[in-house]
Length: 409
Image (cartoon, rainbow, N blue to C red):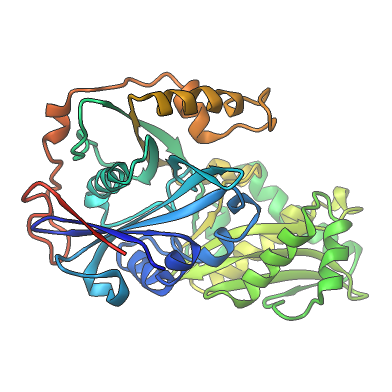
């Protein structure tokens, strides 16, 4: 059964959806909303992100900011002006009431007109706090705009903090391949040309623009097992399936003369933006730098098809990262001053460093337990609404009156 909480103001209505199925029902709407808000690709592949390995211990929540009176069962694009996607951590299936972003760069978290993203983030946190959350972290792209105090209405038993981080994962493309290479560093430019020519001189190889449906599961598993950095079989198959079947998905390949696959590269496209999500390179070709060769073909292909920017999801250690657009990501964190919140923070400290239980850093745990943030408790400052200079389409005064809560089941 769909569970939704509506916080009604004069404008807008805040709709909170919980659970994978409820969120996936909104996939087409979210993809169109991202395109309208000049965030192409931000909401593609939701079925993958809510099904993969990283989703096993998390429960998705979606906050939609809609026109007054709109309801989740009949929402249209014109009804919605912002969406915020969260994950709630679970331990052995038990909800922790701790929520975090799913994307460190803020690409897939807050979808809204740029001047409204902070307001949307604050209202989404407010809605989760009304559902009993004790710790919430949301990251969003602020597109270089100065940030005022958030527009949340939180009580004195809560603390909040904000920070901004420099991030970069997008390469802007020029009108031609050569002009695009000219934007890169000298060494990167040389390598992209050199290793491609070297491989083609040493052995026949074919770049294939659309590999979808050309590999059997057995072929893919064998390639993954013999790759430089193999991943779990289930995750490999899910990535391939997503590239082949989800809206906007694409899969490129580099194949040798005898039909052997040297490299695969997959992701999704929306509008003039391409998101690269994963790449597999066969082992045994380390001196040929297959990663660089494939990316040379990939960048050239995207230029030719009219793509204006490639986002390397999660970044890349490749030297081309030095030429990525520098972007600004903001984190807004709210925590409740309670015994449950304190107990969660104590437990989270075990996952806040590489020496923790999982040997990996959890972003929410590090933020709460390690990072040096300036925490605020002045509710009067929080009550002052953040109002952007330009209103969102069709919305006059979204913070006109205090929220009044109703519940729907």
